[in-house]
Image 1 (cartoon, helix red, strand yellow):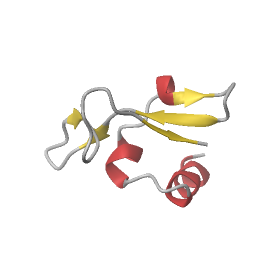
Image 2: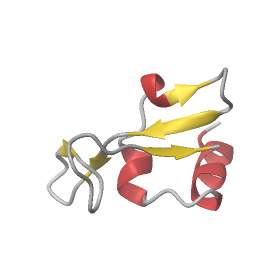
Image 3: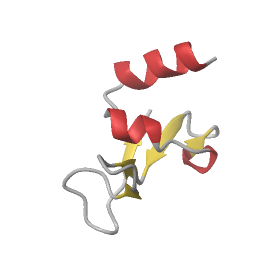
Length: 61
């Protein structure tokens, strides 16, 4: 299951830190997409994704 999920997330343009910080609450089944609101940085801390303010989210369908 990890392989197909990784291929899909890379093909829609997610960054590696966003993929590694992915959790169940970000999956929106009813909208067939993902709501990206955090990423894993180089120090393995979960925080905002690149160039984001506190209220920013990315939506991937």
